[in-house]
Every structure is written in C-alpha cells, then in structure tokens.
Amino acid sequence: MGQTLTEKILSRIAGRSVAAGDFLELSPDWTFSLDDGIGLVDRYLRENGVEKLIAPEKIAIFYDHYSPADTPLHAHIHRLGRKLVERFGIPRLYDVGEGISHQVAIETGLVKPGQMVVNTDSHTTTIGAIGAIGSGIGCAEMAYLWAFGELWFRVPSSIRVTLTGRLTHGVTPKDIVLKALQELTARGGTYAAVEYHGDALANLGIPDRMTLCNMGVEMGGKFATVPADAVTLAHYRDLGLDPGPVVQPDADATYVREVKVDVGRLEPMVSAPSRADNVHAISSLERPRINQAFLGTCTNGRFEDLKQAADLLRGKRIASGVRMIVTPASRRVYQKALREGVVETLVEAGCTVTTPGCGACAGIHQGVLAEDEVCVATSSRNFIGRMGNRDAKIFLGSPLTVAASALEGRLADPRQH
Amino acid sequence: MRLDGQAIVVGDDVDTDVIFPARYLAVLDRKQQAKHLFEPLGAEFKERLDRSTVLAAGWNLGCGSSREHAVTSMIGHGVRFVVAKSYARIFFRNAINIGLPVVESPELAAAIADGAAVDVDLAAGIGSTGGTSYRFEPLPPALLEILTAGGLWARRAKRTAA
Image (cartoon, rainbow over all chains, first blue to last red; front, top):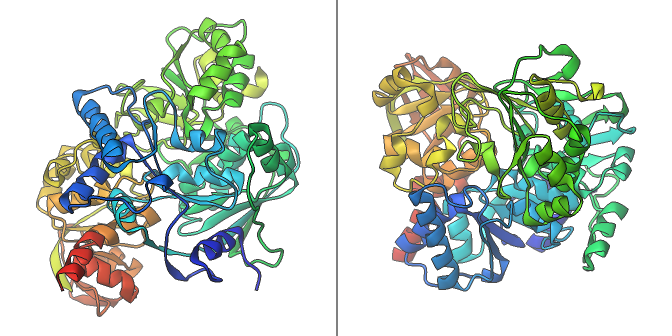
C-alpha cells in the first residue's frame, strides 16, 4: 500500500515500514527548544540528575519569544539557557536577535527535506515547507528526549489539500491558508498531517509554503508539509547546500480527507475575533477602526511579506492614531530588508521596527494591546488575551491586508490599493 | 486508576492562551503557575475554579500553543483529572507525559453539569455523573502506563528503582 510523505519519513526514522495509527518510539533528526521553554527543560534535567545528553548535535536553541529580555525573570531564563548550552556542550544557540526558530532552520538550510523536527513550539509545522515534517511537543518530553534519545509518537493519518490556479492581485498565500482553515476548521486536522499538493505550488516559493504549513497547527495538525520539488531543490542550490535524499509520497497513498482550493478565485481572507478559524472573505466583513497593525511572526515575518507591505505603503503615511509594528522573522530577513530599502520605506510610512523574533504575537512584549483596542495582525492566533489583553480584539490577515488597514485606519481590502 | 471530584465546565476549542497566558511562561513552579490558570476568564470563573477538582470541556481542549504550563498549572491548582469531548494533540501529549489524567468521552463530557460530582475508572473506561454511567475507550496500554506512573519521568524513576 502506498505511503504518505509523513509515513515515508517516519518509516525511514523507525527503520521499518509504518502506517497511520502505529505507535513508535523514535529519535527525530532535530530536537529544538526556545527561550520560553528552556527554563522548564533545564528544571527537568536538573531535578532528574541528568549529566549527559544523548545527542547534543541534534539540538538547537533559539531565543525568539522574549528576546531581548524585557523583564528580570526573562533575563534569568536566558541566562539559565546559556549555562545549559555550556554544561551539555550543545553546539547551536541562536541568541538574541537571530530570529524565530522555524525561520532560521529553513533559511540557513539547517533542516533538510525528509527530516523530522520536534520543537517546544506548536508552529513547528512550518518546517514542512521544505518537504520535512515538524511538530510541537512539551518541555517534559523534550527534556526526556534529550536525556534518553527516544520518545513515543503515533503515526498520523494525512489530509490532502490540493491547491490549483494562480493568485490574483492583492491575494497572498496567507489568504490560501486562511481559506483552507475555514474549510477544515480548528478541529478538522486534529492528530493528522496536512499534505499540500496541486499545480498552484509551482508558483509558491519556500517563504509562501512556510505560511501554508505554519497554520497547519491551527487546523489541529500534527504536521503540515509540501513535498519537495524543483522549488525546494532550488532553495538548497541557492544556499550552496546538498538537500540530501528527497522523499516523495506515493501516488496511491491513503488520505482520510481531501480539500480543494482554487487559489485564483480567492479574495483576501480575514480571521475575525477570537478564533483563528472564524474566517471570512474581506468583502463580507464590517470595517472596524484599528489601533494597531502588526506585521511579522513565523506566519508572515519574512522578506517577501515586508516587501509586499512596503510596496503598498511606499510614499504614503499610515493613518493617524494607528501604530504599525514590524518585526522581521530573522536577522537575515532584517538584513535583506535593509539592503533593499524595504525597512526605509516602512519607517518613512510611519512603521516601528523591532528586534527579529516572535514580536507582539504572543502578548509578551513589543506591542501588547490595551483594553478595547483593535489590532489587525499577520500572525496566526487571535484567541482571547492572545496579545496580552483579554478585552482587545485581533483580526488576522495577510501582510497586504495589514498594510492597507494601517493606511486607512480601519480593516481594509488591499485590492483597493 | 479511579478518580473523583467536583467539576467546572468550559466550552469548545478552549485554547492555551485562555488556559495560561504566554507572559507567565517563565514561571516554572506549578503552584505559582496555578495563580494564572484561566486568568483571562476573570474573577468569577476563578472563584468557581477554586472550588473545583475536575475540568470538563468540549471539543478540542487545549488548542494552540505547545506550552505544557496549560497542563502543569492545572496540576498545580489541584485538578485531579480532565474530561473532554476531544483534545488538541499537544495538550493531550503533555497531559499523558506529565501525568494529568485525561478522559476523552463526548458523552460523559456532555453530561457533566457545572459543580457536579464526577468519577472515572481510567483502566475500565467507565465514568459517571448525575447517576448515569458512560463507557469510554480507555487509553492504549502503553499510554495508560505512562499516565498512571505519573508521566514519562516518573515512569523512568520507577523502572530504575525496580
């Protein structure tokens, strides 16, 4: 029987042929943790007297959630993490300003097609953009994996999402994934892997695919992935790296569900408060006034996202009373945006640029909302209290929707710009 | 493993930002974490929560972030077990691997009234509330073993001691 991409990758790691529903004890290719989890991982290792880690070379730690530290407690956790790296000889710490784990892991070519990543971050599904699989896990189990090398996983069934057609003016990959989320809902992909297929992918680069895979977790997904193709191979060629053996799903693989999206027929999509799957076409929504526009995150903080927003804002000024916060997803994104004049355009338009990382998304720092405020954001979650205030409202949309909204001072349709 | 307690009821798709806001992620002690459990739901909810030892939820409990604080803050608060119609996968993993008993049963979850007494037998797959019993699929043996040992680390310690 044919295998999905997820079954292929998990079979390779398990050393035998596996199918959806199987329970496995296995050792993923990469095991990442972040500043917001490393304190707990450290605590489990200490409490259990762990003196040596099985495979430090599989570990990377990224300071992205509260970086640079905004409170003494966060600074303390950063310090704990740096000491842990030293204590166990962990070769990779991406410290303050390097950026979001998923972004760095893909843009540097650290993770290769066909590999499996676990990370103490739910948006690790993003890694699927390069034909790998990635999933979020907790800190107790991450510490356990570091100490003993193996952890249980269940092989998920897969959902096939087929994308056809070509995006039209003002419509972006974010609108595609919001449409897929509208179809599947926040529970439609629970315990499953979302596998993207279709002719539309030929026109979607790695940054676009990261957006598609990122929000797989908002569908409940364990993994989300785009099988490697010419676009993927070009990414590694451009980096001067060998992508390694490329794995493909079988043509006769079994999918528990299929969703089809004609991307050429889409209009800009928006998640209204306070659920990510409360998705509506922009034309069907009222246009509330906004206080904050936020461009960034692992969903949409890449160069292409900043460039799109800058092109829309060039020579203009965001509405008075609106603050627009821009957070590049990584140092490399920031540098390219500087070199190409994108940062200058954004700042001239009235935007504020912050340190690369997760930024305001999780309501920790760099753009927390006040009560009764409204924010339109490129991020992936608009739950109650997400950006630090339970009485604020968050709309989720594309970089173009966010930029257009900042210009108009209210939720706006980017096709009119 | 048999457990009982008094339930507080929440709805569908209760996410980790509502369960445990991200700005407290650096709080490592479970008792301290418990102070922030369900903080966005306000003071009235907190009062009822303080009288409860069981959480009853709808579909997709714990969707969103991977933060295990969603589970450990419940343990720190004194939540003995959780009944839900279904779980988001990372919350479910964390609960098993940390040792917070989780029951997946749409029927039992739907039957639990706010403030009502609930009891469950995890291995037998039976739960009851309001005088009616409901059967549910017990966890696979391998997961039930981790859970009843008190999580991955506790199971390891027991095996090493044995």
